[in-house]
Length: 431
Ligand code: T4K
Image (cartoon, rainbow, N blue to C red; front, side, top):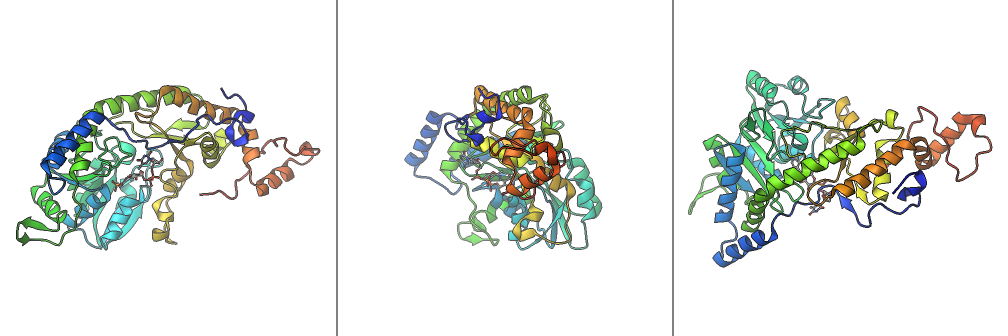
């Protein structure tokens, strides 16, 4: 039980957890089922190249996504590259600045120019107006991203793409099992791409998929993901090797069976966080909707530094000292990453979100009582924000605080926390 700053591990208290609690702890599913499927694959001596487990995984993913075609891949990054190439994109492709770098890398890796756009300030999802404003004579397509499982504005993006004759793809890496109003994520645009990475709601250790209703596109992706081979002695296209293995498909199939339980656990966790954090000033869950049409696989806190009195990075440092390895997804925004930095680009909404969001652990590995302990740390920080902020302040800030507070702090004893004056700026923050 923590009640004051001295109980916080960062100030010498006992950590809330004796081992790291990570964001992205994998959902494991039924081990016996997994070992049985792996055993069958070993007995068959068929371990890759479109084996029966991969085919079954593709069938089930296509069914759940409500599409005709699914090509399973080794990961979603390769799936994005395949979709970009198979869709015939050229020149410039518009991508949101606030996403995991894989979305932008896939465009660049295919030899094209990613043109970044801003996101909605509340949802963090691609802003169709900002995307439209970036369209130029060399633009061939737009990639929408369903961040944190939440579908991005598909209807508006479709309208923009149609008006300008552009191809539309979706990075649904985080959105397998999510739904738009009335239908599952998977069937929008030319194709959508799922990730089945270990940290995802459904995982295949590593894995991905391109899903589409376009038979010709699916055939191109299928050929390309297997060296362009279309028959025993026929190579029809330039290809690569992006195949899913049977071992990955075995894990994927077991994970699919577990998905209803995983979603139920995530929803329960999400409700628990919501209950425990409601009323804490300056801290809110990004997506408090209990009826959300997605698997609630990410618990994302928005930290309002002015209202909480503590910067997001300091809250993260406090949590990490407690062994809660919170993550700043997707800091600092792709436009601020070395390969994409460019003087002319300014995305105020992406910047604000990159500065305020903090992702917390959830999934089947996280117990309700653990969520209560994580929330307790946040509440202690909120209740003692001036002390926490002052004790964490860098030396330069301490000096600034001392200067501003003047006589009120004359006689300040070393080691006694300084109250923080309103408007103190944190000058330097670690990555
Ligand atoms: N598009 C979007 C929008 C994406 O979010 C992603 C991937 C992609 C495309 C590309 O999909 P893939 O090509 O990966 O299929 C992690 C994942 O590796 C990445 O798949 C995911 N998005 C991203 C959001 O998260 P990092 O750089 O954060 O990985 P890392 O090593 O820091 O681990 C993440 C967390 O999970 C840590 O807290 C540790 C924990 N973890 C990880 C693994 C692998 C575990 O507890 N157990 C594990 O086995 O990217």
